[in-house]
Amino acid sequence: MNIDQKTIYKVADLARIEINADEVETLQADMNKILTFMEKLNELDTSNVEPLVYMNPEVNVWRADEVFHDISVENALKNAAVHNENYFMVPKILEK
Image (spheres, rainbow, N blue to C red):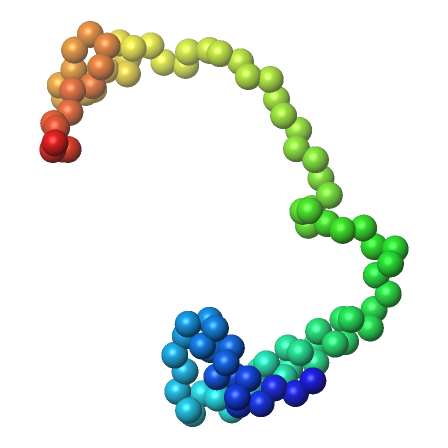
């Protein structure tokens, strides 16, 4: 299959992109290379190939969630400029 200039303009219109007249020949050659490659791929026998969801066949190994405290509230607030008993105090940045 060969792509002509009319098809290049139609694809560009469908993709909502603007192309210059001097880009048409380059795009035409590139699209023809892509279609030639796709025709070559269509010649392959893929009847015994399973469809892929992911490229990597590995399965996620999940670990159990464990709740633990690495740092106490007092240690976390120790270097804060302004804080109360449990929270960092920061200036208001959002307005209503």
